[in-house]
Image 1 (cartoon, rainbow, N blue to C red):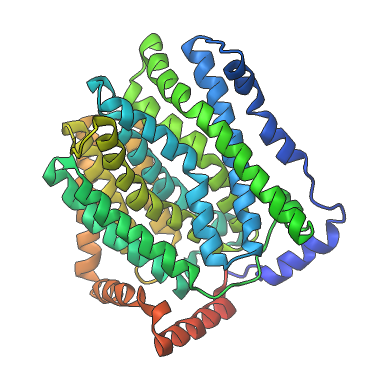
Image 2 (image 1 turned 30 degrees about the vertical axis):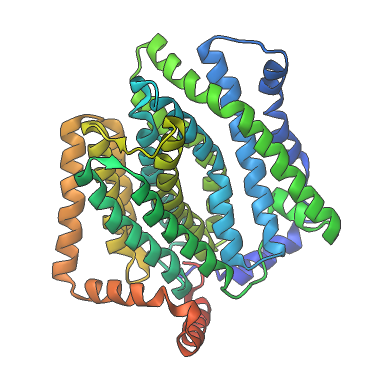
Length: 433
């Protein structure tokens, strides 16, 4: 089925859209933090529901500001590094909330399960909703039956593969320790270093990020740093009350606090990132859209998990392993199984509409039926489907091996050039959908 080329679509919209980008969304996002900021300055203590709402709004506004500032940062660094940084910065609110839960769990067992709840919920949202939504948008908007990934995505997919394999081992250990911090932290450091070495590309900024990017160099950088600092301050004063407010809200309303932490907290922190990815996909830039989603998943599986035992040990005052109960073990294994299934679908750099529907459908089932039996069933179904695809299509295993080899591509001369040429061919053939 035919669909418009990205260049044609972009040129059409740019010629018809005469008004410049507006700063109004930036002001609105910044204003979301003001009500809770006033409460913090006045030392006011509203009820748990209002506390969760106001501090959640502050985190939401800060996350949007961080996302737009990180997008504009592409003007100064390579696109791959900027998108990786965007994925990291956009989930900083979630890191802050998780750090609060982890710190409190060191002294209060009632908070022990919440750090893993937040992390697993965010990961499953990214893959089950984020990855699939990009493919389905290409199908609905452009009639495209698949997304062809750029070969440069091998870096993200390769690191995610290593992190997923490692994550599968965590439930069998029954705890998260500083050994996990070192292993997963090393994966993140490698990933950040590798993305910084990739060639730079001209960024395609839209909306508030474009407004920032159009400023003169010095003013642009000052505006970017100001947004970073403002958002960081909003997160600093909001993370703890938001985390505690969610738990008390669940208790007061009779709602499972675990589910509130697992899905509501990540929704607030991931919303801007989803919006950025959807804007890329709407503009037929599926490669950039998926890179944002995959980079976020990499950050979740590496840096976020790596910080949990570190924060826990600091709170304990000595090196300590963070114990995992049966619910946490189940959630981590389910999340790792979903990640393995998604990687099985993506190892050949193509994700079709039916694969996207499978990701979205299985995710929807576990959301709508949050029981132990359903979670275990979906977990083993993920693993079974991954094994079935690999057995029926041996190319999947070969593609996985090739994918892991390509992780080293940016550091090898001839292979790096070959990967760049292949990326150019991919963009010429099917840059978007």
